[in-house]
Image (cartoon, rainbow, N blue to C red; front, top):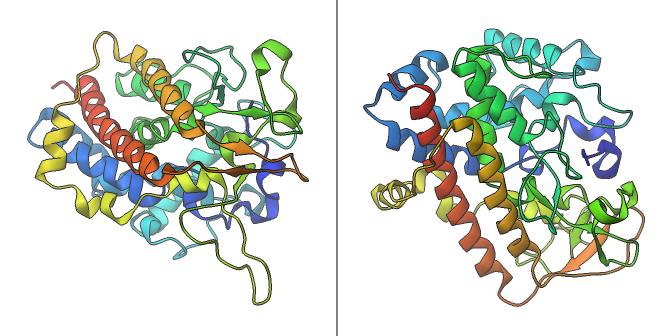
Length: 349
């Protein structure tokens, strides 16, 4: 099901939440953009992308859809956190802030979010398909007509010169900015595959038993990690360390996978990614299915303590850090290659 803000944080804190709690951290998204930029260099797609981006580089553009979360409707669609995130700095001119505010106005409530749910444009970043499913298919628990798969399809439609399927309201430049972000989101496994747990920490199948909101782990945001490979930080002197959320653990990328590390060897690896075939509108569901398979690897071997308050605590198996890095590297490579393929498909000449 769509994530409930109340499950993760209060609405008052939502605008101050680091970008990495929502998707790949800025480095991860920019790495995807850096790979794609190298792969489309010299092509008609590169020229069309540069024209639409109007001075932004492709890596810079990949964080736009997260930066727009800094627009606060309750404060008159203002952007109160100028300077808070270095990755958003290129977007913090008056004209670009006005553009972000316009996008949020048109993509805030048109999907009719239920009380406590995130705004529509925030729901464009993920879907929560149960791990028991073998593929992504709209209609399963956790999917919607405005999830990450639908968002990518809508951006393809607009960049092809077609109207976006409701409820999306996208201008061509917005469609590109959304596309270059959600391709990355779709390849972060916890933005697609979700585990549903009962009070005792046992896995349940919401498509068979019926969806119970109390079982929703909100893409791993409601799961704390008891034994992270990085020591947890204390919240204040004398206070116990704050355990990281599983989702945050997976959003972070190590320094070895930062955008500056995209070298010739990494680009050569991305060139070997098998091109997607058929209509590009079919690619998002296929890619989500592959990401769902990766999500099963993310959760393999984890054990869960009974639910306390609104969270479960997971213990990671031995060797998990190596598995994590392997999956992240693979998914970032796939995302960069597939973003390049998609840009060349929508901008063939």
